[in-house]
Length: 403
Figure (cartoon, one colour):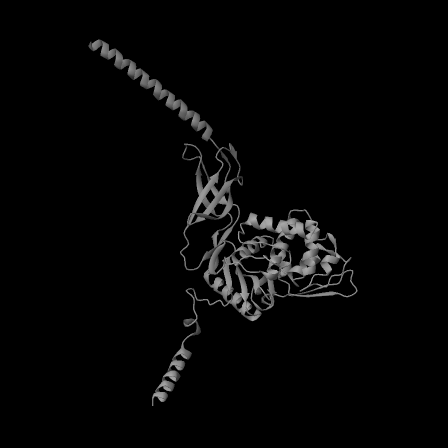
């Protein structure tokens, strides 16, 4: 009888549990359940972190390291130090790199853009080393540049030992630090043209074309995903820096130490969807909309209307009531104002923090009489002083007569 009761209780318990929603059992405070060792979710425009799991714990990053390799390359391109069509000679050192490669041969000539594609799409270790040698003169010099840039960005828990992420001692970073360098890389939007490509063929100057297939399957299967970098080693397990954009909102998710690539992709997809459920883009001001009236001098009829020279939209949290304040930085010293003249900047603040800014222009021609108003005011003050002195003098004479 006891055995029957135990079995019956177990069946009932299993039935009740089976009827419960899955998230009611394995749920975190915000409705996500990440299995990976570490994770972070960030809204890119504001930098707001909306999910965090052990994001400052150090782990090996595997090929997510190449986010920094791509960042230094894009910074060099966008600053004009190098060009995308610069030709790089592949060295034997680059060719012999193990792990994932784009099958480069020693002596082969490839452009910087080809190598960027090799890194961003196929996670080519040979391509990463070729770029490192071209930009730094040697891998060692390039690694120093990587660590210097990490310090500049505030990546306090990162130490790079190579540009590839291949296993080596003390090559460590955190999900938080990866989010910093990934967000910085996203400022160079050209990179998304490469990291968001699922398949690419490079055939120039080759007998056998190079077929590149993106290691980041979310690019193909997750709505809006266009980067950035995956990684795997036996030590690091499965990692990813994943970004996606929907309806003007861009989310960034870092996963480190997932046990399988399916769990990595599931965790990343879940977090990205969670982020999109929280944020939206709202129009704050339309171009040519009136922002403020600017009084010029003491004459109440002497004023201009400041209008927005550009439109402005901001990413905001859906749940929060939008409370925006405006601060003006305007040059009032301009004497002859013409219609359309840029007068300064309107700064929009959310909770006291700058969220965006637009230039403001004058809606009309106006002679700024504020200078003359000031002179007139000075003269008026002078008259009053003179009048006061006469009063004081008369008062003194009256006192003498009274004596």
